Image (cartoon, rainbow, N blue to C red; front, side):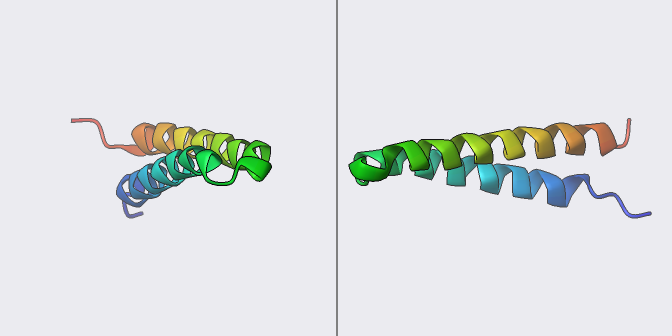
Amino acid sequence: MKNQSIPKRKWAFFAFYLGVACFAATGVFRDHAVICVAIGLTLQAIALGLFISSEKQRPKT
């Protein structure tokens, strides 16, 4: 089976930066700040899970 750690890591960084963008959007969308923070926290949790999963699948050298 092909090593899947690289694509997972790319998606982890994408989710991380998208979550950071959601946190930054709270300044613009003040009426929906709670929703932006909830989406940002969810994306941060997904990013952390993907990164940990990619590290577990990484081949040992």
